[in-house]
Image 1 (cartoon, rainbow, N blue to C red):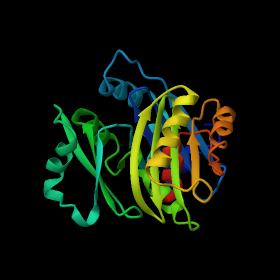
Image 2 (cartoon, rainbow, N blue to C red; image 1 turned 60 degrees about the horizontal axis):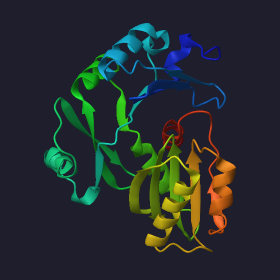
Image 3 (tube, helix red, strand yellow; image 1 turned 180 degrees about the horizontal axis):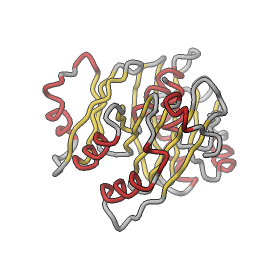
Image 4 (cartoon, rainbow, N blue to C red; image 1 turned 180 degrees about the vertical axis):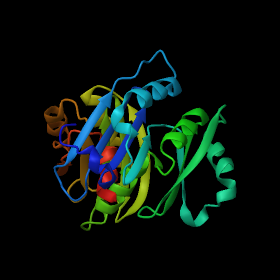
Length: 259
């Protein structure tokens, strides 16, 4: 945090990430590439997210300054998306509950994703939302999947091939298949072993009819045993590419890239 001049906080962007297994925030100034800081926070898993959030907000001085822009990312598996042409605001809860059972004390929010041309609906705890609105009344709130979808949509338009993107974090792999900016598949699977990751990625590749010589597989995120994974995948696919990342969650990085 030494590089951040809080007397100039209104020149910076604050991005907060909330997950059940930990919180974090980043502060950066768009005009200066290296004027950037990232701070993780270990939550107490015995407490609710609301209780952890109260403690974090009260004890973290950097979160009390005014910023030019505040982004908040919510890590949740409770999301669904709808082609924007078919989306109607007044029915967003009904649409969400087609794919997710109603949950007590949950509010449904919507991210309108212009690059992807979809409305992404996601759930957030009402008490968490209230706390966030009190402390950051002008913040933009996103599901973590939203900036990933926007970033991959943008990148998938480059070149003339179809692309499979795999985002790795701990034991979860999130996958996205695109054809020239149009989303064909969005799915995720839990696995820890390299052999299982190879199996699932190649299964998706085959099911989507991707070309082993022409199309591309892009890997990004926290990739355990990366060299081993690449070696196995490259036995079957010609174009396997690792997206370079900074030492921050890729959903935060992609959010900043898409702004």
